[in-house]
Amino acid sequence: YAGLTMENAKDIIACGFDKDKTFIFSDLDYVGHMYPNIVRIWKAITYSTARGAFGFVPESNIGQSAFPAIQAAPSFPSSFNVPLHGDHNMCCLIPCAIDQDPYFRLTRDIAHKLVPKTHPLGGKPSLIHAKFFPPLEGAAGKMSASNENSAVYLTDTPEMIESKVMKHAFSGGQTTAKEQREKGADLEKDVAYQWLRFFLEDDEELARIGKEYGSGTGDYWNTGAVKKRLIVRLKEMVAEHQERRAKITDEEVREWMAVRKLKF
Image (cartoon, rainbow, N blue to C red):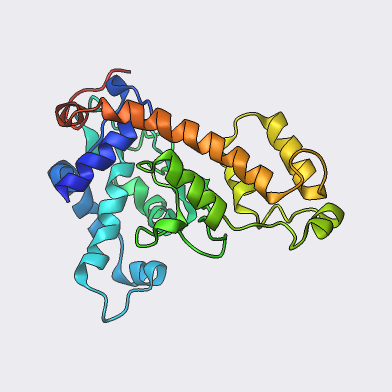
């Protein structure tokens, strides 16, 4: 898994974070620093509570039972004594998808036991819930590494991106041009439009695409035009990411993952 950690870290770094203010860590390498808090969390959460939150059954392995505390430990500044200069009153903000919410609901319940009484939030982490990103083949499915047509990868070539979007992006358009002109597209089901909602920064352009595609009028009246606009945007983003990532060495990743004081 060390190789995957290194590769994933390169993708994170390529997004443009500030190294002076960013500490990337691997649970396997950093767990010793968090272990005191992990033990405190194990002690604070009963098995009955954990079973109710995660649905553990007799067939669940003990690693599943142990993991919630490991997931929760980074919520507390005392897990990062060196990077955060020993300030145990710092607050934590966690951006995550809704499926991670049970971990941090439990964390908030017992947070007061792991921080000083002076902590402004009683130790409770705050969350920003992100929307699930729809897979290419439709919102009802899920992106999967085992199905390369369910997503556009950051390693894809421009040709692969175009092929995936044109062939596999689920359309919310009508079955015939006549019906599309009359009824317009179902924007909530159309993957190309949904992806543009994430990636297109020009709100006016997005509104125009939605209006025209949803009504079957204008330049973006049909699925093909919307898919082509998405392809242009994805090619730009992936090319820029690949260019930045290619310059990141393993040694640089180790610098980002070194236990050190951050500058803030």
